Length: 143
Image (cartoon, rainbow, N blue to C red; front, side, top):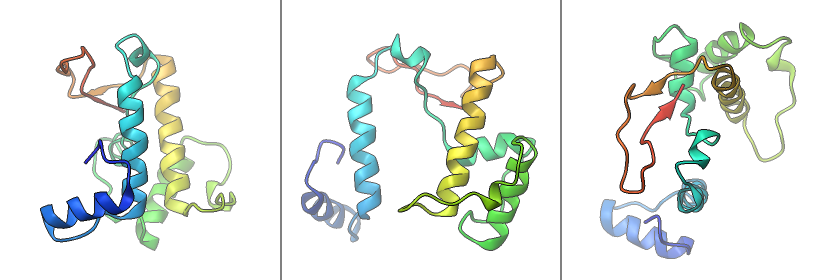
C-alpha cells in the first residue's frame, strides 16, 4: 500500500485485504514514511534515523515496557513521570499544538530525548547489529 497516493484507493485495498479501511492518519503517515524512504541513503542515515516512541519509553523506563496504553489517564501519567525525569519543567502544563493530542506531544518529547542521546553517542540500536536492506540501509530502530 505504500505506493498508493489516493486515500480512497488505499481504503479499498485495505478493505479487500483485511475487511476494514485504513484510518486517514495512518494513510498520511504512510505517505510521509514512503517519501522519506525514497529519499534515504546510507550517508543520510548517519543523521536521519528511525525511532518508535514506545521503544524509547521502554528505554527511558529502564528497559521495562510501559504497560498502560498511552491514551489512558494512567498511561499518560506514567509517560509524563518518565519524561519529567529527563526534562526540566512540567511537560504536563505545556499547551498541546492544534490538531495534536497530549500523547502526540509526549511521543515527540521522547523522540527528542532519543535524538539528544544519539547526538551524545549514548543511543542503542534495535537490533544491536541491524541487517542492511538491498540499498545498504540499516533496518533498525534507534533508542
